[in-house]
Structure formats: structure tokens, C-alpha cells
Length: 343
Ligand SMILES: [Mn+2]
Image 1 (cartoon, rainbow, N blue to C red):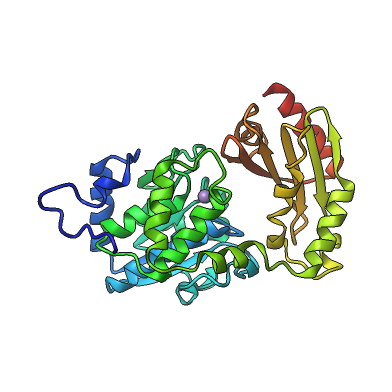
Image 2: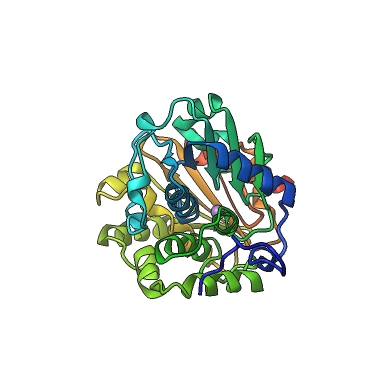
């Protein structure tokens, strides 16, 4: 059973049954008109993409391609490589490196990208794009598109991407569902976070009904770390510091290089560190290949880490946010503590 919204005459359509969405109908209609008249659609998601960013982009890419559009999908990392744990996602043939991305797209759609800066190298392209549609769920997203499809209450960008799939006249197949499910299961912490509403489970049911393999997807996302990840994790845990409601640690480039581990493979470190029951806030500083520190933060709810990170030039959600920083670990943590004290 796949939902179909092409027949919207009489009775509530599938889209109407998806639960409330912050995006008004006329805005969806304008988005469909923009997409309808474009021959070529350029899709982008944030740098070092996670499953929600890449999965949402590829799911919509499948539908646009089936509509006969030319589709290019990318993300603006200087070193363009799909994170190892996301290579199982179908639709990778839609991907092109930033150098092959349309220089001045007729229509560009961004996914899960909360700020212009998060587009990395593709900022140049978006500046020259005629129309831009922003598809996102980050509350900090102020909307940088000519049209914004933003729902801060959505558990994942995949929630909005699913709606876009139906509204474009597409239906779920196993490939599209796999892409969307990867985003939904990741952003809800395997359906554990408070964002996991009844409509999230209903969406999961629609996706699973296509016959996708939830066990295989979970294994790809979480249970296939290289041995070196365990070693780097142990270094990070050994260094962890607990101080007044805060637990934090860091991983350097050198730590990773010793085990040939990519920066993108560190995503799960914060999920172990934040388990410290004494801490309200968890922080992991990860040095990327360029020597910048990508700082991940988590809160159990009392502290709005999105506000703390915004003060440091980043953003995100109340309970999960991040920012980029330069300098020494001690300097960055001093700045973080200062902003945390104000929160
Ligand atoms: Mn997301």
C-alpha cells in the first residue's frame, strides 16, 4: 500500500492525513509550481551530511528524476566523499561533486541546511541560483530561500521530504523509503527522542510497509564501525572530563589518523559521552581534516544548547546543536563555559 495524492478530488487526500505541518498550503503550491516549470533541479544538503540531509535529498531526487527532470545532487565539502556509513543509501548515482554542480542553477533546493554557511562550497552556486527552495526542520533556520518549506516541529527534514514526494505525485518505493527512513530513524535517535510523535510512528509505518529492511538499515548506520573506531572512542572516553553538570571530551586529527578513521565516523561519540547521568550538557570537540574544531553539543532539556551554540556562531536544536571553532581545546571550552553560564 503506497499513499497516492494525485487524486485530490473528493475526500481527504493522503497529504491531509499526514498531520499538521507548519508550511501553509499556498507555500507548498508555489513550491510545486517552481519545481514544475524547472527542467533542471539542483539539490544540495549540508556539508559532511548526516542520514537526514543526504536521505531527504536523494528521496526527492528519485522523484524529480522520474518526472523527467535533470537532477544533480551534492554537498559542498572540499574533499567530496560520501560518509562511509551512508554509502548504503540508494540513489548515489544522483550525486555529483561540487565542481560538476550547476554553476547558476535555475532552481536549487536545499535539505536540512540551517544556514547558508552550511552549504560550504555550494554557497557560490546558491548565490547565482534563480530560485531557491529551503527544506528544513531546524528552528534556527531563518529561511534563506526565495521560498522556505521549514517546519521547526518536524522530527526530521525527511518528514518534509516525504510530503514533497507525495505532493510531486510520487509514491513510496523501497529505495525512496530507505532514504527517508534513514533520516527519520537517525534524527529521532531510533524513535527515542521527544520529537517521536504518533505521526512519526505513522510515517515509519508507511515507510516500513514498502518492504524495507529495518534491521539491515540499523546495522549499516550503527553496527558497522571499523575496529579503529573503538580505539578512537576509547581515547575520547579516557579523556572525558566531568565538571558541574557538563561532560566533555575531544578527538584530534592525529587520534583519527592513527587508525585511518574519517572525520565523519565520529558522529556517534557524543551519543556515548552524553550518557553520563551527572551531566546536563555533553560536548565533543572533533578536529576535522582542515584543523577546524567541529563541536557537537547535547542537552537533556533544561539547557537550550541551540542558543549557546548560536552565540558561538553555530546553531541546531534545543537538545542537539553544534558550532565550528578555531584555537586550542582549552580556549574553545572556556568560551563555551562562558556562554553556557549565560544560558
Ligand atoms: Mn535533520
